[in-house]
Image (cartoon, rainbow, N blue to C red; front, side, top):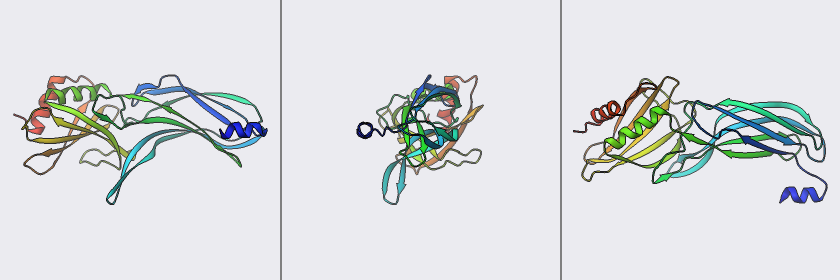
Length: 248
């Protein structure tokens, strides 16, 4: 609506649009796309053209919780250039998603994870131009094996969301300012488990897993395991989880 009003006054704003060639991919893979932008009714100085990988993270503040957009990574495409009136440009790009990018494509009762590319053009003395394009981030092969193994152990994935903060364990630490929580509940009545919250901290050659275990008659327990990203077997991982959680 604003652009239509400005157009009627002969004051078109700068516009930007991003097209993703492969919006469905895994963390750590290369994203390909193209940014198209066009000048408005007058020449404009552009301070910067950025691509931002973003998610919505849950933030705890005192007794309250709220959701906040969070930048996971950012790439400067171009800076400090003159965009002439009505001039159109097309810039192809490739970028690698961080290994810890939250996954969005999982089957569960409630999936609150959203990941997108935000295109931001900082226009000097003008209205900034933006565009949002959502990604479908698939679980890696290691994560898929773990999810299957949890199912074999009698757990059902209930909900998935992203929390702002950092995970720290003895031999690993998350790095992108947030972490994903996958909440599992037992499919067996009287199993002794209220829930198991799982977080992945993926690296190039291995994936760390943190499990926060809430049992019915025992205090919460924090456990970790590390899985190689190659030559994984569902049965082997199932046995590891059963030993770790002391499932008879």
